Amino acid sequence: MSAKRRIEAAIFDMDGLLIDSEPLWDQAEVEVMESLGVDTRRRDELPDLLGLRIDLVVDLWYAQQPWHGVDRAEATARIIRRAIELVEASRPLLPGVREAVALCKAQGLKVGLASASPLMMLEKVLDMFELRDQFDALASAEHLPWSKPHPQVYLNCAAARESTRSAASRWRIRSTA
Image: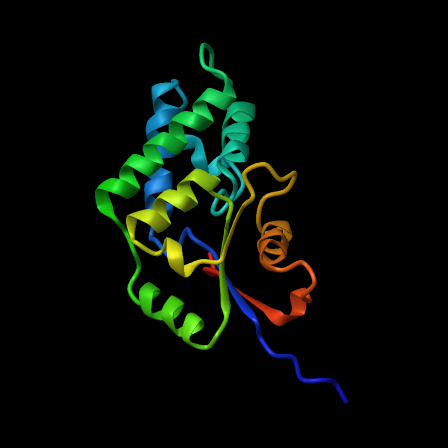
């Protein structure tokens, strides 16, 4: 007979769950890649990029169509800046987010945010929607060796709250994309 485990925390993903940012990331990526002379019509030749950390996306584009003059780190930074501009302009908070987070808090859960997006973007989004005080921990895969779907970013978020609790007592809430 297995012991009952009490859920202690909920870890949310950001892109596609809290905010509808995937189309904005796509737009930023296409704009920057085209500004570098990349033929973005060849995107279907790349593996699935959805949810992949943006520096890895840039690496895939560069491997397919190397460009000159701007290094990959700068191309990545440009995409991030543009994505943030687009999020600030459109404010794409998804319906039910405030209620879902409030429900978790009302149940006494610790609430975390884990994302492949850069930490500064997580902070900016939470501040933009006045949600920062609702989250107990933030974690970004920005500097991890692996991006999602590898679970390390979620494990880091869980560890940021309380390292002595079992990861099995946490739920991860993410988009299905």
